Image (cartoon, rainbow, N blue to C red):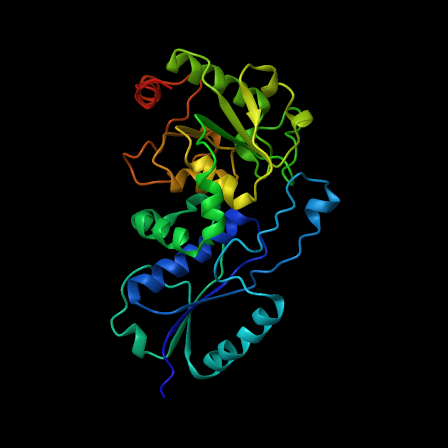
Length: 304
């Protein structure tokens, strides 16, 4: 029997947001070309979150249907090794139909995290297909648990963890993996409430602890979402009426990609839009401009 072409995603040793880039590129390519998809390296041990005493330990086991026990993951590598010896390897293929892809005896491998200057790249043009692929890969019990949670009104992701604090005198627009200043989130909450005309409730999604986010919680009707796996938090954040992201954190960016809601991003760290033009991809100024005010008012045009 001839060896059929295959799409292989080797997940990078990274956080959930960064893992989703190669995973969904592989899934989209597989769907476009009607090819089977194999995923490896999905069981990873992360020491950093324990050493840094982070609230989230970034354990992504048992979130997806393709995740198997450790022994099964090791066993599944054998047929892949055969294919790699007998097939042509194509790395990071473009997301398009390949004529006769199934008969080319080719392994299409996806494993790379894209450059920060254009995270979503080709995925923007295949957003609906990527969302459908992701939801199909998630275990039913995860989705059932998500459905029991009320969607947030305003969802704000505040990245802490392995992001460092901004140093005195440092230009925030010139650095990466740095925490977005807390004053920014305080100002955003006030501006959103001004646009909405009331103190609408705010849900904070963070890998930090409440005591690390003191100023945000001095505002009324602000609560920390906790007790969920990271995948549920990402999907729940995506269901917010308004999404506010942390600069440089792909966790929040993915929530925006999966959502239909307006996204507010820090103006110093917008390089390319998360979604295609015309889908609230650039509501980011503080104070918010007229277009942002209009979008927020439209989101709250009905009674809360």
